[in-house]
Image (cartoon, helix red, strand yellow):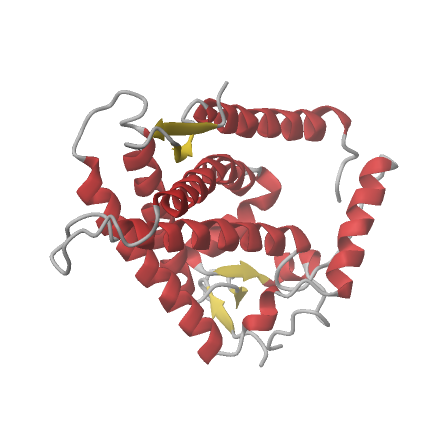
Length: 50
Length: 223
């Protein structure tokens, strides 16, 4: 998986074009993972609050 | 200055409730309009990448300008009302945070009464501030690369390498917003946090909620 999008200018040099959009699913998956982890912790492990 | 309180409900029916104003109307409008802008910007940015084709550029930059105006309004309002310190993470907040981490590691319940905002709320505010400011500064620069009613595009304002950094920062901040918005909505919908969500919709919390969650020394309200 690439981190960045790059292209080449007229001189053949690499030019940064931005973040790789493959990372869209990484950040979406991270959000899902954090939500599931927190919900599972609160449901199964966390001591009961007042 | 103490926070304003109000009395609502139906006295004749014995359902009078004493409420405390947590978010004034302009702050709630700022929050929800900003939320609408951020969701619109995320949708117009990422839906085309996911294959949903539509003319997203105009909607994206106009919404971006609205968000810039909203953020400037928020900063102006905070400065004029001298409320910059309301989000300051102080020693008491750090102690709260350490207490929560310690209790979590020891698997014990924790009973903390915070000021108006908890340390978690302050940190998520600062995280959104950094990320949204990054998007609007880089987005503002990128606006110079498109034609608008006010100027002609100028793609040569910055060297290509600098534009690359601008694009990376804009994209990274946008990607981070996906995770942050998901977390923000999740916590807003958790049962124990619904009082804060209601306060962001209707403006108030009850006296009982104030007594249960807040330290009167750290958030002074009218009695």
